[in-house]
Length: 470
Ligand code: ADP
Ligand code: MG
Ligand code: ZN
Image (tube, rainbow, N blue to C red; front, side, top):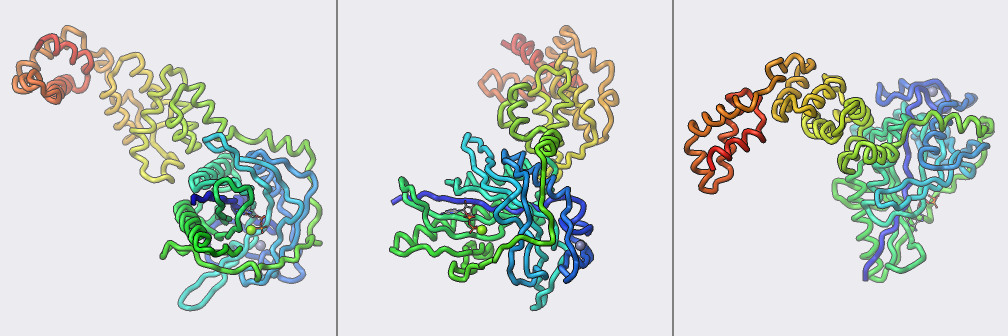
């Protein structure tokens, strides 16, 4: 019997506003424990929270960028629970009137993953387990979050991974979060169930909490999918429960069952005023949004005539995309620009962070100049490659490396005589080539390149040699 996977995601993203959601403390990651705190964010009695307007603005941006409708009137609610990471014993969140609703993100297959809601809330502190004791660091307490909840629309692990990647990229583009998964500024709860293919009803789900690595999410889902199928195949029933992923053992383990599910006794927070946003303000925020990754991707394929794989790689890093566009000015074959970036320049940037930061020594205008020279056939591709390498190392423009002599190139007669010389000097290679060893030809061309310091047109030289020796 074959089973279908069904999943829905709840994603928490820390917003990169300068200050926290209800006080003026910094949201900066790290720092000495309990130094980014004040009476408000450690929840001392008698303090009053005041909502940071930028948090609302950022969340509206996130909602608009994921095709949500924005509620004109919403409010903050208290979610009551007792745990040391939350000194007030309630988290200020949004319950029945979330700021954003009914959005979606499109996957590359064209399928939409529907977003039920996006609401704002405060992050809790962090428990640090050390030397057999538990310490509390409240620096993270009060950092603003959006929680983005999807419908149970996922049918495979790949869809989940693609959704998270797309979501991350959108949030990064619109500048509301640094979405660093390893620092926990994007964390996912994955709800997962199985059902027989063809069934319309959803199966009973489990929820795997708080994961901040794509590979862990994929592994945890794989494990959980198989665990649930095993139970059903053996005549058991799935218990609705919260589980955690244990990466050491690559398993999911039960944290709590539904019977002891929390009753949060949500009620409106009386300390905070109603949030009201006019349509004009929403429109204003919409106007400020940059071009979104999906739109840019489509434009790169259509306007620059790039293969989709190239366009995807360029768009994946906002700064790279911008660099590419500047380097393309007045160039006809944009694929050449893209090739230089994706192969030669990317080779100098080994990590994802390096590609994201894209701190290379040469401005796009230098690459532009180089590509123009290759387009007008003033220099050949091997000289271009060598020159770019030197430019990348030194940050100097191509005029430092390409002389008048290079630009004049080698006229055909000179090249002919060099080719004749090459044939005489490489008798062995010529014979091998004539006997069917294609590879031997390379050493003849190598000789010519050496003689001309990389200045010869390899294609033309090949043609000349072939007429000489045939
Ligand atoms: P709760 O408020 O108890 O967390 P929700 O109904 O809001 O529950 O759902 C939370 C998440 O679980 C949503 O992303 C939703 O799509 C997903 N979900 C709900 N039912 C199922 C199911 N049967 N299988 C998989 N995911 C589900
Ligand atoms: Mg939940
Ligand atoms: Zn504070």
